[in-house]
Every structure is written in C-alpha cells, then in structure tokens.
Length: 167
Image 1 (cartoon, rainbow, N blue to C red):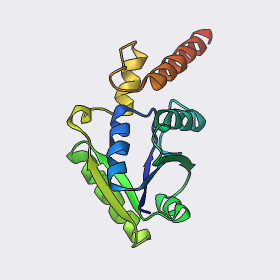
Image 2 (tube, one colour):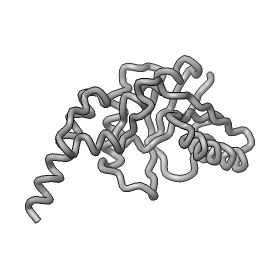
Image 3 (spheres, rainbow, N blue to C red):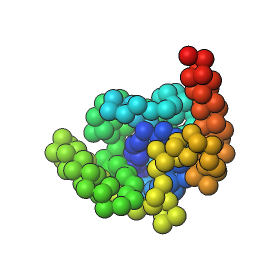
C-alpha cells in the first residue's frame, strides 16, 4: 500500500488543504493528515480543535486518516511506516522553503521523499492566516473553508471578543 503523510498546522483547514488531500488520494492509496504542534507558531485553535476540524472535513474519504504529531516529521514517517510526504505549493516562495525542508528531511532519512503538489489556481492565494484575518473583521469566509470550519471560526472569534471585552 502506498501511503503518504500530509502534515500541517491546519489553523484552520481550508479548501486549499482539502484540494491537496483530494489530489494526493489519486497518487497514494492512503493519506495520513498529520496535525502538527509547531512551537514556532501561535495557533488560534488548540490542537484538539484543529484535529476535530480536520476529522470532520475529511471523514467522507475512506482513504484518509487523521493523526497528531509533535517532533520531527521524519520520526512521524518512521512511526507510520511511510516514506513520502505531501506538500502543497502556492508560489515560488513556498518552493524555496519546502526545497530546504525536503533536503533536510532526506539528510535525516535517505528514504524520505517529498512530493510537491501545486494548488489549484483558485486557491493559489489562500492560506489559513488570510482566512483568520477575514473572519476577524466579519468577512465572509464561506468560499475558503467548509461550513463546519466557518462555524468554528465564528464561535472562536466571538468567544475571544467577549473575553477581550471583559478585561
């Protein structure tokens, strides 16, 4: 069975992420979406909330499972018995960073392969940071995230506004 990891912070998961997962399923028999805990980022959603959103939005795909991981991606791959990782690319700047990461990962594990998928043109500008910014200012994010995620964004931001007002 050809398996691949698709790691990310997914804060929150967007239609761009789902597009990459869907296209990865054409290449691989099974895609394991790894929700990462990245100490270099301060996510809006907790790890559990992000796992919930990813599971909810991918549950209709039999070829997809969702897991969490903290640590090196090559270690996650070894634990899962996987030698390939999927990475989505939107622009040349993404490639430069991903190229460095791919070479670093391969130096840590020579069997490790990175598979780069270009996002569909309708999602080339889309990322989770933009989605959160639009949502914070009350903009319509329904074109960017599934309804479940849109609801979670509204709920989270409403709670944050109330907490901030109470201070």
